[in-house]
Amino acid sequence: MTVNVDEYFTDGCGRCKFGGTPQCKVHTWEEVLRHLRMVLQSCGLAEECKWGMPCYTYKKKNVLMLSAFKNYCSVSFFKGALLSDPHRALEKQGENAQAARLLKFTNVKQVFELEMILRSYIAEAIEIEKAGKKIEFKKEASLDYPDELQQMMTENALLKTAFEALTPGRKRGYIIYFNQAKQAKTRYARIEKCIPKIMDGKGWNDR
Image (cartoon, rainbow, N blue to C red):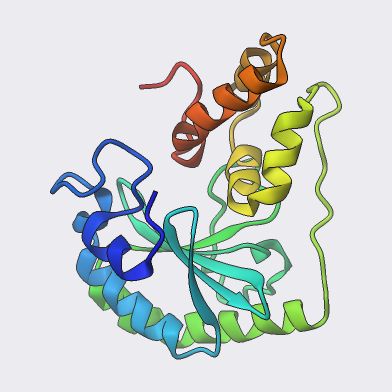
C-alpha cells in the first residue's frame, strides 16, 4: 500500500493489482486530481497519506479524502452529512451512507467551476471539527457485526464509511462470510482480503 502522497499520483494507492500500472484509476483522472490537490493544499489542512490515498486533516482529525474511482474522482468529506450543503453539490457514495458525502469530478473545468464551493465546504468542515461535532451512526440491528470488523472500522474511518455505504444485501453477505470463520485470526484475514472490494462498493461475490 502506498505510504507517500506523491507516490499516489504516480503509482496509485497500491491496494489492487493495477497499482503502478497504466491501468490504475489514478491515471484516468491524473490531471483532475492534481488540480484538486492544489486547492486542498491551500485550505489550511495537513496533507497525509492514509489507506494509500491523500487524506487531509485538521489537528490529526480526518476531514476529507482525495480518491479515484472508475467513473469519477472525488473529494470525500468524512462528516459530510453535517455540512449544510447550500448548493446541493454533495452526493452519497451509496444509499446507506451515514456520514461521508462526495463532490465528484470528471474534468478540470469542473474543478474551476466548483472551486469556491469546495473551499466554502472545507471551511465549514474545519469548523465542524473545531466544534467537536460527531456523526451518530445507526447500526442495523439484524446484522451481527463480528468484533474484528468493528475494531477495524474503528481504526479505519474510511473503511467504516465504505462498509456502511454498501447495500444491505452486500453488507449481509460480508458479515455472513466473516462470521463463518471460527478463529479470530481467520476473520481478520478475511476482512483484510475483502477491503479492496468494500472500498470499491462491491459485494463479496462481485468481480
